[in-house]
Image 1: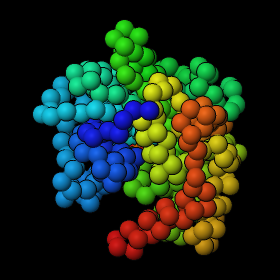
Image 2 (image 1 turned 90 degrees about the vertical axis):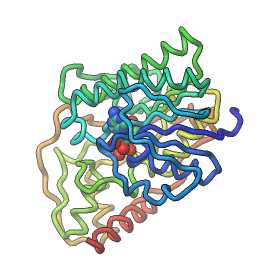
Image 3 (image 1 turned 120 degrees about the vertical axis):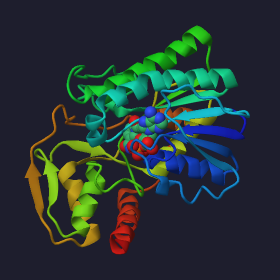
Length: 317
Ligand code: NAD
């Protein structure tokens, strides 16, 4: 177990997951520097943290060298476009952030003697041929398809992180995060849950890509953040899966959202995305055994909190 961190750097801290990471750390008494270039993040995600003495925002692109006064004892590296809509719009930037940006942050962590935690993704498993996915599975990724800009950037980032460990004995960890949802996702970012929720609240039909039989396992954001921070505080390198193993077909998720919002709208089927994985479910034995972590927020509860958050914004708009 690492001692409690006093100074953390969170890249991508103004994004969906990153802002919850910053919030959790600030609440637990850690000083946080949030580094973000707002490529896909939003100032309003961290507006409530800006008045805090222990929180600082540095507007910066992680592909540029970073110098900061003062010490840092952990770097949580989340900077990267993450929704397909974003990374398909920013293909080269996504590859550069995953490759050069990760190298810059590994160098930064090394100069500060800080632990480095990479936010990787279940997308490294591609369209998996093994089910559920264990960390030992090497994946089934199309290296030249449109989604490869994200998947391969993360695979490279993992390889680079492991090379720093092997060659320089760097203190590093890799979290393979599975689909996460919750407040502060963007309504128009193309990801399934915000799309379903905003459609249901607007009384529009919910659009299901493909047959709807493809499965997803979705994890509420506070659970994902707890897993990521448990990894940061451990001595584990990983990679380690962080996700919720409760697997559901997409049509069932749409039904849950319709039931919880009381929406009368139906569903509409649209074409599936290219290389969209058919099944996705983490095996989280490693995180359970080594980190003592498991997701705690049930789907109905997580969806209700998410719907409430979107509904409040919908009402204010
Ligand atoms: P997000 O788009 O909401 O947040 C990403 C943040 O990184 C944004 O604030 C963006 O402005 C920032 N960023 C991007 N490029 C940058 C750069 N070059 N320099 C500085 N900042 C930059 O996405 P998210 O869903 O919060 O994802 C955060 C991380 O978690 C990503 O690394 C993503 O790959 C990983 N992840 C997320 C999920 C998920 O379901 N949300 C699943 C697996 C992995």
